[in-house]
Image (cartoon, rainbow, N blue to C red; front, top):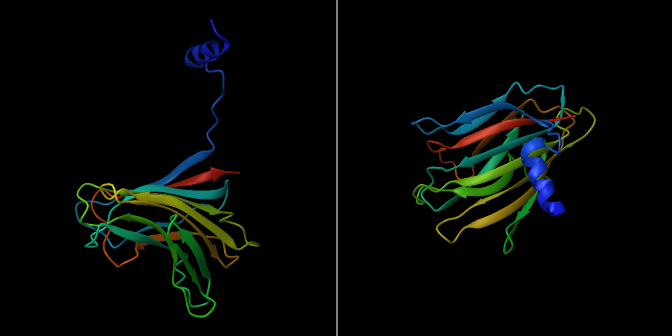
Length: 192
């Protein structure tokens, strides 16, 4: 038996590696038959985790093949110029900063709009050091949508300038549309 085949065989029968759970599922929201304007995770635990991660599939009622997602934390509408972000998809770059005007959100990845039948976009959003009371918060996202061969993959990074621990996260459409039925977002705590 070759060494590699032996490792594969031991993985199947004896579990050569011990799996440890580094993520805890904290909440999952699935949009019911009636579309909703946003998904909010509130009452986020402040102990036991270093970071948060949101994973999901999303589609909106926006009358186009693609829409985008916005992220707000702690109900902060940006009046203190707290949101800054930069992103791109390989051909276009985007940026927003609250330095010259109030930025009311952090922009995030593109997802599916209403014209793509049965097509959903995906997102993985990391929120680093979310419970720290001495650090500003870094958010980073990757995701995209395949609009029947003409989709996009994007990466975003954002800064929330506040040392307040994050206890709520609101996600909604960039274009003000509703989130469609079967859209689903799950919140995970990343263990310390």
